Amino acid sequence: MSQTILLTGGAGFIGSHCALALLEAGHRVVILDNFATSDRSVVAAIRALAQADVPLVEADIRDRCAVAEALRAHGVDAVVHLAALKAVAESVERPLAYYDNNVGGMVSLLAAMDEVGVRQLIYSSSATVYGEPEQLPLREDHPLRATNPYGQTKLVGEQLLADLAAADERWRVVSLRYFNPVGAHPSGLIGENPKDRPNNLMPLLVRAARGRRDGDNEACLSVFGTDYPTPDGSGARDYLHVMDLAAGHCAALSALRADRPPVQAFNLGTGRGTSVLELIATFERVTGHHVPYRLAERRPGDVAELVADPAAARDALGWVARRGVEAMCRDSWQFATRGEAAS
Ligand code: NAD
Ligand code: UD1
Image (cartoon, rainbow, N blue to C red; front, top):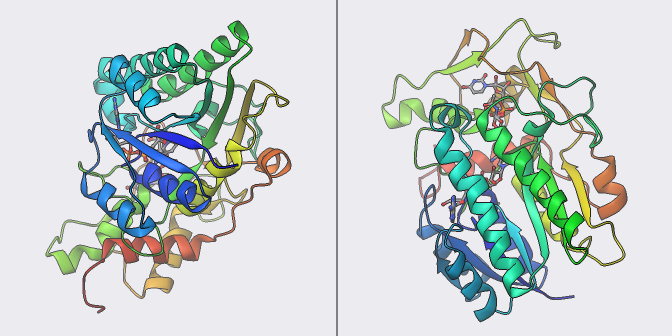
């Protein structure tokens, strides 16, 4: 059934891919973003790719009146809530900014939804809510704990939704715990394009591979940790193509039904771990470009391995990740080199 979806953070990396997936599935999409960490040009790219007039509400989720007005004006049925700040190190330095934006913003968004009577929400959670894993692969019933302020804001978000649904049975919420989203739209027109220096592996790997092209000789990738209990000693993660992740949001919409539990949480991952060194080797093979790297100390706060058990999403949502690490590397590179002649 076609619905009207308000996508908070819809101009961001994951939001832009979700917008396209929802439009392709026949839904109407309204993007709400304050462009704190994204660019207005992304909305134009979404419109061009979808060949649709996608309304944009330039607003902050903390502006309750603006959000309520957007929900009313567009006749919104459900909200996909992605708007958040996500840099772990920055969250340690600026906890107030993170609690204000991610927790305060979510309280304000939910209050606006309640006021207007829109009580269906899909929430961008994260594998970070599992903290240090006690068992792998991670199942949704693994104990939840945060190890940094960013993770704490994601966890508080899940708890807030549980409390809200317990207080009012009309709410239906799904938390999606993303593992490590990478890759880009196969058009090469949208992808991960952080305004500030990236912190995550794939954008840094791409930057290192581009180094010589950009005259950036300093862009050597540090491989954080060589003595983890993994086959090659580098950390392993469950990398997930952002196109598969976006499809997971369409699947989750179907779970926002009165006959389903009011609060559900699903891992979105592939169930397969890839080490940093394996990812570098795959990237070099697929793109034909060398990645300069150096072996370095472990990064504080990192764990050896994080891998999802994606069975619950498969069983309840009919969702499985289809794309492999090769496609993730190829599409990330294609986006990074968009508009350039092949070399
Ligand atoms: P992103 O920074 O690319 O996108 C976030 C978007 O939200 C941006 O467009 C930003 O401008 C917008 N935004 C931020 N605060 C806002 C506010 N107060 N009002 C309106 N708009 C606001 O990040 P992303 O990677 O697309 O992440 C999206 C969501 O997924 C976040 O909630 C993040 O915590 C979660 N998540 C991301 C990852 C990942 O690796 N990328 C992993 C797990 C969870
Ligand atoms: C990080 C965050 C996590 C957040 C997620 C998405 C930390 C500790 N965790 O996850 O909370 O939900 O991003 O935003 O920051 N690596 C290198 N060299 C680099 C960068 C990373 O070797 O320059 C390694 C890391 O040690 C790790 C892997 O690459 O083994 C993936 O790192 P990253 O992309 O930052 O994701 P996570 O640490 O899994």
